[in-house]
Length: 331
Ligand code: ADP
Ligand code: TRP
View 1 (cartoon, rainbow, N blue to C red):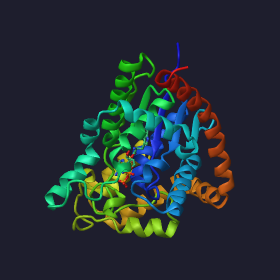
View 2 (view 1 turned 180 degrees about the vertical axis):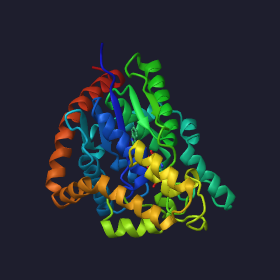
View 3 (view 1 turned 45 degrees about the horizontal axis):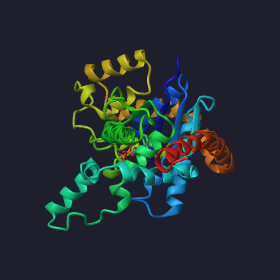
View 4 (view 1 turned 135 degrees about the vertical axis):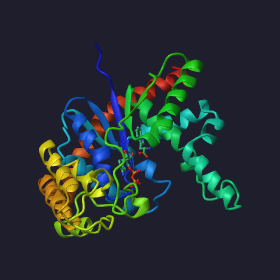
């Protein structure tokens, strides 16, 4: 029985935060213990919003360092930088010829930009570059280049994986069976992690706790988590509390049950709960944070890991591209 090929990309558009860690990075690191995975830093996908090379490079290193520091299994995971595999540009360009323009018009992110422009009375395409418009074609190229069967993504990316499947189907209809049809796998188990203000933790809301913030910053941020105005004596609802929602992802079952009880019983102020949360996160992430900082101070080590991954990925990419070009352009 052949093993399924798992692939996912992580866009380097910010310093990793606790929401990224719980919702994306940790599940990927856990998956790398069991499955062979292509895992890449999607720097080309960041280009339509970030135009400063230093910023893209820094965020790319940070994402790679975070994954490695968290214990990514590099025997199973092929970790590489998307832009290191030139074949992906070529496949994306080839795929434009079988992709209906109407499919791109239906992409959520493009539609959101059009709706925003329309509401503001601007030209529908104001501020939309072609990178944003054909973003799903580049993503289809990523997925199809490595013969992926399974693509674990956040819910917001499901449509893109479905588009990759559609594009593979259009291609196969014209040129005969060439691509496998990939399946999105959406991990909802982590739920939405709240940020400092209780809304979804997101860099767009400026309410994040950086994953590997130094101890003093981590403490300061946690102390700034917004709570209701219950007095220490009052009973508190753990399920409504950002403090408890974060704690759940770091503590073991007994510890979680104990903190839940302390919330409900009353007699514990939010300041105490925040200190408990800080100490827990700090102890769970402490070793990984040291390794993260060490790696970022030794970028040549990260370069070597990424280069090694790229060398493996390139072999598969070159083979697929050759096959596709033969189908489209002849022997
Ligand atoms: P941001 O919202 O800060 O821009 P991204 O959209 O770049 O974060 O997040 C990358 C991935 O990290 C998402 O696809 C999602 O899986 C995960 N993620 C981000 N924020 C959260 C959150 N608050 N809760 C759960 N998962 C999250
Ligand atoms: N577009 C994805 C995101 O914004 C990142 C990504 C790029 C990706 N290429 C991919 C994810 C291929 C899965 C498969 O998060």
